[in-house]
Image (cartoon, rainbow, N blue to C red; front, side, top):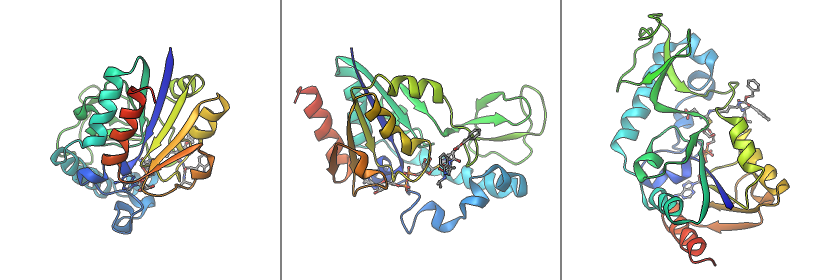
Length: 231
Ligand code: BV8
């Protein structure tokens, strides 16, 4: 059975109105990554970080999946093989767009995590630093987000599927953050055909067999059509 692995980054949610990280108006232009996306930043100022993710959660809830998210759901539903989406994004637009076989390798806005006992529960719209864990009662609730220096989720499963991928596509990712940026090399080693879908070549663009340049809401549906047509 043929396997397609798709890595997505902030660029697939850009046309849903969610800011990317590296655009000069991006999230990190307003916040130093060390202050809001590291465990050290969280321990230094848990209220600042919790507030940063409350705002991201509010914006994600107000956003809607776009044609690119929906096209990937159609691919999963209609393709005669396995389709796995591995997203770096913490928004839930893939789920709301219909994708089911999905890994949030950097966590997600809609889950809270207890730093004391690892319990997870649905995140409230607004979390507060020191919220109590519903399982162990410790005042140790944190966003269930993989920060820099933390191990991304489900890496074993991701490498297992990359090892048997026939097609690997990276959509809307700048290729600056590892280990995600290394997935194309892993898929190529397994003999996969690799494709980058982006507005412009990423930092690892030269490692791909093929590039589809343009906005994701146009390029992704066209690519999915070509796959389903057997082109
Ligand atoms: C780890 C959650 C190890 C937070 C994020 C070398 C090897 C391995 C690791 C490292 C290394 N060097 C340094 C490291 C450490 C670090 C790293 O990679 N640093 C970088 C800066 C060099 N990596 C880590 O710390 C990772 N952990 O390595 O753990 C370990 C080992 C043992 C034990 C413990 C630990 C963890 C990294 C995860 C950090 N968390 N996100 C949050 O969301 O708030 S990262 C965050 O930025 C995203 O999740 C994403 O992964 C990353 C990059 O963002 P993109 O999605 O690519 O978005 P960006 O804005 O950059 O680009 C947007 C793209 O879209 C652009 O290309 C643009 O052209 C395109 N685009 C825009 N509009 C459109 C579009 N495309 C199409 N259509 C459009 N309309």
